[in-house]
Image 1 (tube, one colour):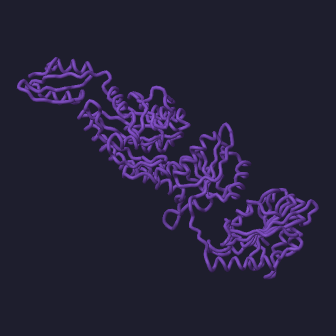
Image 2 (tube, rainbow, N blue to C red; image 1 turned 120 degrees about the vertical axis):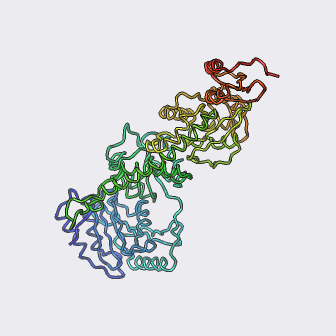
Image 3 (tube, rainbow, N blue to C red; image 1 turned 90 degrees about the vertical axis):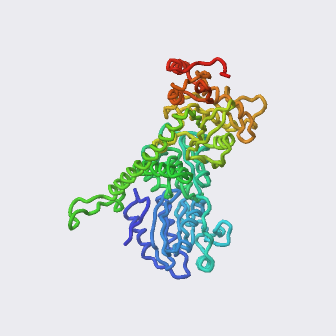
Length: 590
């Protein structure tokens, strides 16, 4: 005889044996549930002060019996019909020890998600008597997807009417399959830090295409080692997730493989953490070959740390002739394949990095300075980049719209040229896997001659995000290049308002303040240098090539005596040029 499942700890063996008799029941086609079964369920539900549930098949057999807690019960998914668009051919009857038979939101959510033939709740009094009952059925025409009956006397259930309702619903689903095309995934956000951190997580979820329907914050000093939020809170969250019909739960913390496994067992929906969410966004945004390789590498490193063995899924595979020998487990196979793929990715990325280094050396040889736009994601860097360079890189009001660094020449006020680089945006808790995989791209910020820190003046988290950008730059080793603060969207500020002292107020959309920004960039590039005119005699012509590497050649003119270079460089480089044969000119040669 089948066993009783669920929360059976502390239940007498005699009680379990009595409940096992439910499996012997055989219901008539027009019987929804036998009164004898209702009486037994209510009696033992009152004794244990726990919910009890029956699964009854369309054929009148009791398929399973479950015991829950006093206020909830975990219902496993059981279907007799393979089609996910049809009813499961299972009806669920369960008790409410609280005394009321009114269906809860969790009950109705289970009806929708598991596609039961019917969901029935029976209230139980303190003395073990059935009080009221309510039933709900799926309905393709109803806005909510189901219909509920009125509360009825549990000792006089409309058995035939309810069975007729099941048959009518089944025929409706067979005749006209409901539109099950899913919209955005419904997500529940969970954090342990602050509401502000959850605000950013919600932005990330929207960018990834999910719809946030519930936010849960549990303040605690550090994550629980097994469930991140603690087991009790996880069990409470499971009921809320079921009640709101969520498809996934997103945690604002980095989850270990064991945490994720434990949470998915309790919540029974997909669980992802902040790192996985960011990697999903990166995977959708990457366009270039290098960007796609970097994202794949970050994803593989993330996965390799979260491979867990579970039962037969990762059981040992036989090895050797005649399947003798210890063989190799599926876990080991997965890890080996990930290592092999990571090796291939590193080889390809190293090749691309060599090409990037050659281009960088070419720029350095030509004396072209590099200016990098850095800042928090979605601060307006790409819009500013397009405005300054006349480019048309992808711009969208979303996080991580730019993943692949793009460089274009920009002309400074006095006619000199610089290379402007648009970089990937930063974010709090930037995953280590991302930083390591995008090392070559982020290195553009590290090696730039000037960094322009773009901030969004309309951002309520302006100051904290500005600090985050500086911390990320420091962690990358980008500490030597001068920094210019650019406060974007200044047209939205009140006159005279200064939310970031010392910053250049600009508007990438209207063009306001861009001339001042370019002047500041030029000042920083020229800081510590002097502009001079040098006459290079023809017999010292080879010196011109060295001077290009030591400074910036602004213009070049051939005269009878040699070549006149208008040159900008540091003082000691100018002295070096004069020692090597260049003549410093105070005025132009006629």
